[in-house]
Amino acid sequence: MKHMALILGCIGSAFVLSGAQAADSLKRPLASLSSVQTESTDTDAPFDLNARPAVSAAAKPSLSESLSGTSALTAPRAGRSLVQPKREAAAGSVDESALRFYASQNDAARVSMEIKRLKVLNPSWEPPTNLFDEARDPAMDQKLWDLFGTGRLDEVRAAVDEIRATDPTWQPSAEFVKKFELAELRQQLVAASDAKDSASVLSVAEAHPDMMVCADVDVMWRVAEALVHTNEVDRAQDLYKHILTRCPNPAERLATIQKAAELLPATAIKPLIAVGQRRPGAGREFESVQLDLLRRQVGKLAADPTGEPVIASELRSFETLTTQKKAANDAVLLGWYYYSKKDWPTAQTWFKQAMSWDRIPKAVEGYALALRQQGQLAEAETLSYEWRDADPLIAKLYIEILATALTEPKPAAMDAGRLARTESVIEAAQSVNGSQAMGWYYYNTGAFQKASPWFSKSVAWGANETNVLGLALAANRMKDRALFQKVLAEHGTQYPAVAALKAYDQKPGSKGQGGTRVAKRGGGGGGGNGGGQAGQLAEAAVAQFKDGNYKEALATLDKRAAVSKEDQGLGVLRGWALYQLNQYDKARDQFASMDKKQSSRDTQYGLYYSSAKLDPLNLGD
Image (cartoon, rainbow, N blue to C red; front, side, top):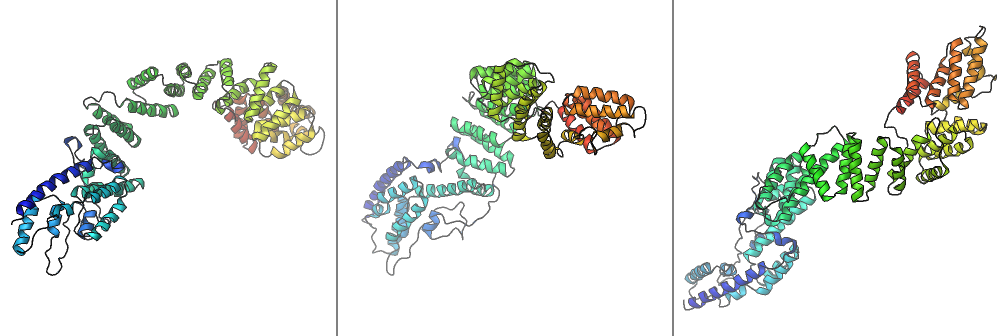
C-alpha cells in the first residue's frame, strides 16, 4: 500500500490533464460531423418520434463492439454502452486490462478499487507507475480526432486497429466513441435519405432518438421528408412544429418552413407559420414563405380559374406587398390572374406596372394581349413590334395581330413600310399563320403574283387546309394550270375544301365529272324548260368559285336554286363559298343541314372546319 498515495495523486493530476484535453478536443472543427452532439439542453431536447419497433438490419459492428470483440450481428446495436475490453492474462501474470480501462476513462475511484482487488489476489503485484500516461496518449487521440474531423470514418477504424495491434489494452475516450458512433449512424441515415429509402431513414431515427436534436436539424428535415413519403403527414407536421418552437437558429427555422412548403399542402403550412410566429421575437420571419404560398395559389388560379379562390384579404395583402417591394414578377403573376378572370383593364394595369419596374418580356406579352382584348389593336401592334426580339411569343403575337387585319375580306391598304416590317418578322419566325395571312392579303387585293409565293412558304412551313386552298386558288387566278393540278393532286384527298375544287376541275362541256355532269345533275335529268339554264348556272358557279369570286358564286347558286333543286355537290360548294367569305356560322349551318339529310365525308369535314373557325381560341399556327 506504500504506492497508494502516489497512485491516487497520479490519478488526480491525470484526471485534470485529460479533462483539459477533452475540452480542447470539443473545440476542434469536425466539418459536417461537428453538428452531431450527444448532449441536449432544454431547448435542444431530442424529438420523440413515438418510435415504432425498429426494423432489425445487419450492420457492421459499432466501434465499442469492435473494441470489445462483440459483433452487432449477435447483439442489439441500439442502446449498447461501451463494453470493457478484455484480454486474457498470460500464465502466471496479472490481468491489468480492467485497471487500464478504468484509467483510460479517468475513473479514479474504480482505479483505486481495482488496485485493491488485484492486490488481494496478487499480494506481490505492484500497480504500474505510468498507468495514466500509457492510457491516454495525446498523439493517438489527436490522430483520431483529425480523421474524424475530416469525415474519414473508415480510416478511424483502421487507426484504432493499428494502435491496438501495438497495445491491446489501449482504448479511445468514451467521448470520442460516442461521437464516432453517432456520426456513423448519421452517415447511414443520410445515405438512406439520399437513396429515397424512407423506411430505413425512419428505422435508424427511431432506434436512436438522440439524433433528433436542433444541433443537427438536417437529420430532422430528412426524417420529416421520410414521414411525408410514408404518408405520415401528421407526424411530419409535429416534427416541423418541434423545430419551429424549440430550435433557435432563425435561418434554419425559415428553411424548415420552406422545406415543409415543398412537401405539405398549403392548409398544413399555414398552421406551422402561425405556430412559428408565436415564438418570442419571431416578428415577420416567415413573410417570404407566406408570399410563396400566395404565389403558388394565384399561379394555379391564373392557369385554372375554376380552382379554389384566393381569400380576398390575402389577395389584397399580396397586392400591397407586391407594390411595396416593386416585385415585377409578382405583378406579372397578378396580371395573368386577372387576365384569366377576363378583367382586362386590371390585368393591363398590373402588366404595365411590372414593365415600369423591370424589362420582363412576359409583362409585355400580357400587356399587349390585354390591349388586344380591349380592341386597342394599334397600340398592341406597336408594342409587340418593339419587343419582337425579346421573346418568340411576342413576335408570334405581333404576327397574330397583323393577321387579323391582313385577312379581312376587303383589307384596308397598308403602307409599304408597315408591310415590309411585317414581312420581315414573318420570314424570321417562319410563321405559318403569318405567311398565310400575307398570301390572303395579296390575293384579296388582286395581287395574285405576290400571293402565290407567300402561300407556297406557308405550305412549306406547315401545310393546312387554308394555305393549300389559297395556293390552289392563286394558281388558278394566275392561269397556272400545272401548279393548280399539282396542288390538287398532292392535297385534294386530305382537305375537303381543296377536294371541292378537284371535283369540278374540268373544262366546260368536257366529258367525265366536270361541268357537263353538273349540268345534267342540276337539270334534274335534262329536258325541262329549266334544265339547260340550271346546267349553265351550275357551270358558272363552279367557275366563279375556282376564280375566288365567292360572292358571285353564291349569287349564281341562288339563281340556280330558283329553277332547280340544289344537289349534294353544289350544296358542298355553297358551304365552302360561305366558309371562304368568313361567314363561318352560315357555313356551319349549311353543312349541318346537309349532314342531317345525307351525311358524307364532305359534309362532316365542312361541319368540323366551320365549327373550328367559330372557336375564339383558334389563333392560327
